Structures are given as structure tokens and as C-alpha cells.
Image 1 (cartoon, rainbow, N blue to C red):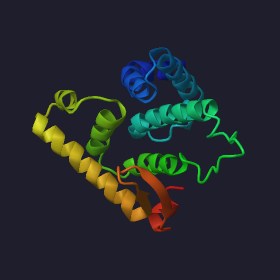
Image 2: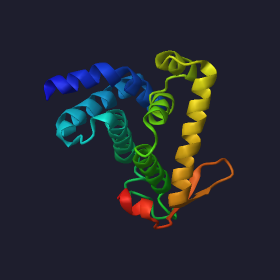
Image 3: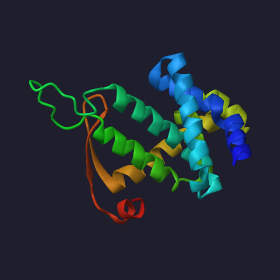
Image 4: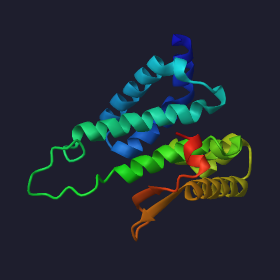
Length: 185
């Protein structure tokens, strides 16, 4: 088990650190969250069912660690809301559900599309660097990433109804209760 965790560290630590740093903007905190991520990976390694989906599994753990950090350090998200404020719906709920659904549906994408999204969207690899890693042209890499985003968007929109604000941020989430929702729960 320790050897497997070490392999994952060598394979994903740089990309995970960039991903985490992109979300927290503090190098020391990013290092702490990266360490927490690998502690959780080590403790949960036996729950990994499909070796082909290890990358999305690792990045989901990192996202959960980041979400836990923000929940723990943001009193509004943990219910310590001053009485004079009207809390309304919890602001992170729709986004958390969207991210969860996105990760679940990535398993339905073809492997190379999933790989492209994981590298570019989650690991913070530029499309140019991804093209070099994949051994394809920059134009082909841009097309692959765009196609993967479109496929993932279609999967999400066919499963659930999302409400967006004028900036494209998810502000509401309503399951349609189709077969794909039940399959992923």
C-alpha cells in the first residue's frame, strides 16, 4: 500500500499542487492541503475500484480536501451566521453538486477525453503542454479539450437542470431524475 501511494505521489504531486495552489493562492497552505490529500489517498487506496480512473479519483480527493478546508475556515458555510443576516440558500451547494456530478460523468467520457480534461482543467496543464505530453498537435489538443468539455456539458445538462447567473456561475441545481442520475448515486 505504501509503495502504491509513493507511485501516485510521483505521478500526480506536481499537478495536484498546481491545482490546489490555483484554488487557495497560498503556497504554504497549498503544501499543507497537498499533504492532507496524500494522507487521505493513502488511507483510502483500497477503495479505488477502477485503476483506469485513478486520476479522477485522486483529483476528487483533492477537491474534497479543498472544500473541507473552506468549510472549516468559513463560518458562513458551517452555520455560524449572524442573526441579522438572511442566509438564504447555502452558496456552495449548487457548485458542490455540479463538481460532484462533473467528476461522476467524466467516467462516461472516452478515456482520451477524460485525460484531456483532467490535465487541462484539474491539473492546470496548459493546452500546449498537454499537446506535447499526448504527442499531438496544439490544434488537435485544443479540439480534443473543446470536444471533451462539450461532451461533459451535454451529459450534465441531460441529467440535471442548472441555473446560471449572468456570469455563467451555477446558482441553482435541480435534478431531472433521469436514469443517469440514479446510475451515478
